[in-house]
Length: 307
Figure 1 (cartoon, rainbow, N blue to C red):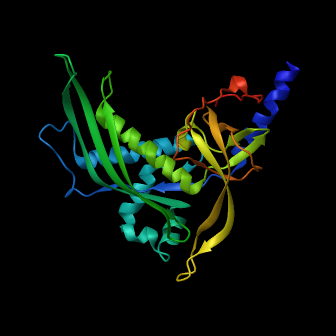
Figure 2: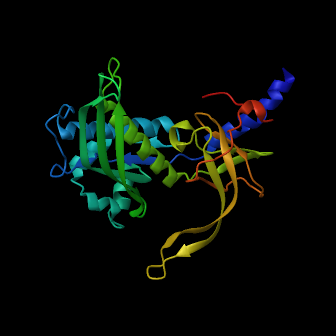
Figure 3: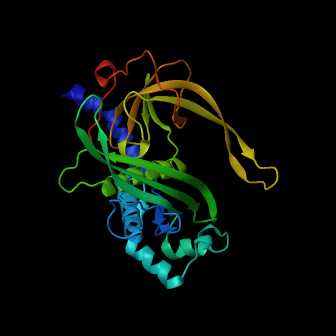
């Protein structure tokens, strides 16, 4: 029992370290939709209005952001009421003059804005090769423009065009392609938002085992993924505007994901190089080959409780 308690100490210390970090406050503004470019086909299966579907996407994004436990997310009704009352324009949130005023009214550190550009879902029937059977599945697609704005300065810190495609082959009670499409799209956006506010970093080092500062809901990582460990260098400055664009990055080594917990991720170093807490970690675009991901059973490191 004494040994078990000792083994848990590093993980409990890590949990406390992650919990102490200040949580930024996000204001998720109501997503808008460009009805001129939304495609609806003859066999479309999305129900309700396009505005209703867009509202569901906003709700799902808020739900998943709260689930990460890395952000304080403002209650949607409060945000919606203030937006209607003050008649804010989308350009106001990125204005150096207006953004701080709105931030003070809402108590937000970041604004999250989105615009749905394309949404649809269809029921598709496909023949199984070398068979007389026909399989029917639901396929959905969604394109959304996402922006994250620093509320204190009005600076756009992230702007991305995301395309989500989802397939539902077998439906169970209460399940439909609309819910899956919204959930999948929200998960992608949560990963991008978290990357912007909380870059993936090494929170703790135990021998060859790394503990990363993001968990299952926000890291987008799974067991077997290869990641790069990077050190940051000098700031990169735009010579025309004087704006800091980021920092130079140098690859230090690589690691492979071995365990994904709700609050953190564990990885094992696969190469040489000295790693330190605070170093950046980024998923490699190259899949690990000729290697099987180790499991916790083969690593001499404590395993923590699930939250």
